[in-house]
Length: 494
Ligand SMILES: [Cu+2]
Image 1: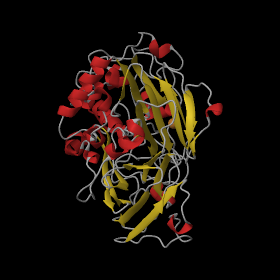
Image 2: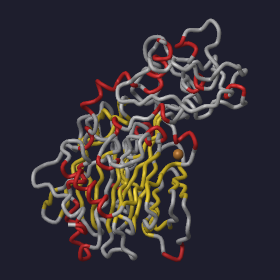
Image 3: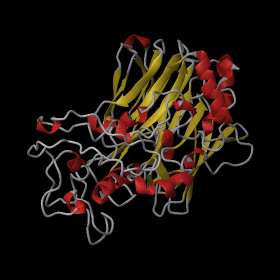
Image 4: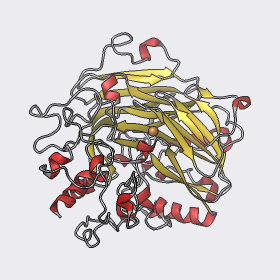
């Protein structure tokens, strides 16, 4: 029993739940803001209110203040504690308490000043990805500027003539893999047609987090945590949309993989790239868009099909959490190899962290553990016993988790290939209560057991249900995304 318990704890990182609780949604309140800060409600004044501000679920908006005609922003590069799912708090590097960093929204034609303070223990440099700016503002370390030293500041200032879905990121390659990116939305002078009612942005990221450690291994080539706006399913916040509205979703990717993002129940058109708006003549219907590394893609559709629709990366391993060759084997073979204890059988460390001097990471593929004796990954010789010994599960109870048994047939163990998803997702992984928030109101019970990795929902709701969630969101204090505070966000429905 102890071994089973350890297995689940190690698989899900649940031991960190209680310690982590106060940090839940800690990213919702950016720091570094001065007085008289303004939010994106200003943008709605453009185009007779036809431009809606962009929502970035789970990521705050960066306020600004006006200095004459200049919009002044303040970004602080710093270490961040980020809860990506309940029970898993990781050490990232981000901006203003969040990874990805807070979203910047400006209007085409704005002159902006962005003060970047470096609170990291090493030098950094900020690149404005895709911006047509003077080279000395490009943030290329060594060529366009000296890197910003620890404790230092660099002030970027430029006029923006572009429009579209852009982003900012550290131009130090390994820092990129620690989370240092943020969305930078440039609203067009004139609203695009057809206008959208809802506008969202989602940043795609991935991390390799070895057992017993909370720091991503930025050297890894294999990733076991993938996130949408810094959260993995089921902790991602669903996008809520009233039935019939036109929706834009801006997808931004900075990592080591390309992600085919798929939407259920609707056909969309790709209306923009990391270079701005695409001409309508290029739009064709689809439901999956490949968002390559360093790219952004805007998709638009009419939410004309009511329901809770999955929006997710379609790479199978990107629909999972903690996917790794160290944890996977135990779910895919019958019992432990003879003579090994639990930790060694799973290829887990018995002391220290994976990057400690005694253990040392391996370079290249693999999670850096057991690199000389990789665990078997295929399904082992089949046994005839019952795949689940009934009564064996009740002892495994984790706070908030539902932990009911998976549904498997009696002869499951005799079927080549079993198990695949039986112990990886499903009712036993459900944690509806732990990820409860206004946007999850009314989802089917047990939904959370099937949402992991780069997965979220587009919830196409009747107007009254939508209004109910918006009301709940307004009432809820403390742990709501800051952008929900923006006046004007719900102007259509007030
Ligand atoms: Cu993916």
